[in-house]
Length: 201
View 1 (cartoon, rainbow, N blue to C red):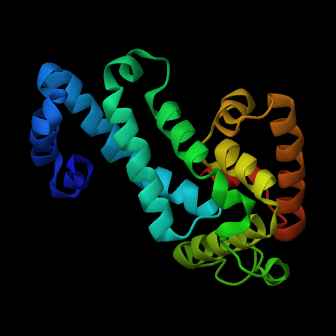
View 2 (view 1 turned 180 degrees about the horizontal axis):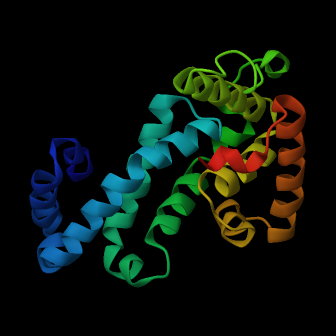
């Protein structure tokens, strides 16, 4: 599969994209390289967002691969659109809706989120330790949220989508996203004593 080739480096991946299935050969180098750049820049971020959204690592990687594969097949149209990255994230989160209904959870026991450490606590003098503590705390609080609220938080605070874009990805109204996002921010403040905007970093 062409997408797996990204780990082999930009040049190798670009060559495989141009040869794949007779689709990319008609694109030309610039279109192929743009797709490779999108994949290399956003694949790790997408996997991370899907994990925070509730998927286990292996499932998140499968969903991300499928989302990029579907984008690959529509690349000429997607590339001309306003946000190719937003398109990939939308496809991925639509594919993972089943998992938000509880079949895959990031934190198996929501009660465990109550023990999440505050980012202002242990490791405050060590940036690496502080970041790890913050990440663990955020994951625990997100994992304790209802799946719909968690998805809204991940898309808006991690993937940096607008409520309108997140609503399109989730198939719900933007007003519903805003309500869920307000509740998610309140959960993060209560659980971590932090500014929810830091989740995007």
